[in-house]
Length: 95
Image (cartoon, rainbow, N blue to C red; front, side):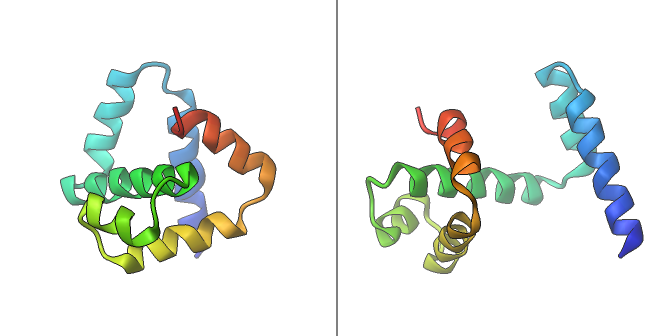
């Protein structure tokens, strides 16, 4: 588990230090498989749609073509977040 934490800290540092989108995208191409990038992208869309609160969870699942379980997981994680972070997410994801 300690190696995991070390690797995660290095990953976060790399992301924070990257100053342009092209370099960050290249870094992600190196570190993530196409499937992992698709999963991250879908998770971001799920969180965005949940924060928008314009559709039911079932409607979100149908529109994104994902299982209701994935929507529920996202919803449960949102419930665990504190308001300042949720407000930050809304400013970044909900436009």
